[in-house]
Amino acid sequence: MSNVTTSTYRATVTVDAPLERAFKVFTEGFDTWWPRSHHIGSADMREAVMEPREDGRWYERDVDGSECDWGRVLVWDPPRHVALSWHLTSEFRYDADPARASRVDVRFVAVDERTTRVELDHSELDRRADGAQVHGAISAEGGWRDLLNRFAGAAA
Image (cartoon, rainbow, N blue to C red):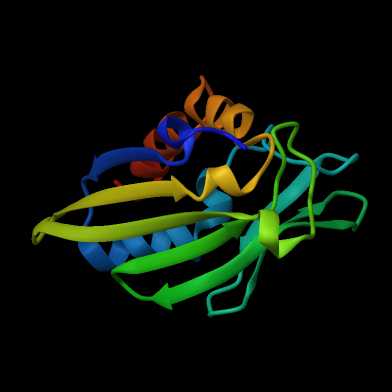
């Protein structure tokens, strides 16, 4: 198991968009900002999908028609909060065991009528034997910080 210092990764971005728009672009518009390079299937990714409901799927659909799950939607509370289970290993392979899944909470806080602060906590990484490596991967270049910046650009 990883130690407590790597059990949670936190990132925040301020988005030039109202609260409702920020939530909608992050969730329903997930495919507009998620990079095609970030996929786990053997074929190229055609689209990234986040089903807009609790217990919905979070997954990729590839150009060959195959689908690869990444996790489930745990909380669907528009426009303030979405939480996802993360079933990926440090090598970005799917692990179906929910006991080893980490959790991604994304909260949307209105700064004013046109600006939203988005707070991401990727937690429970200590549930995995490779949790420290997952933390390293999601905090590295191309990880959550870069992904949130891509999202902020799409929402603006």
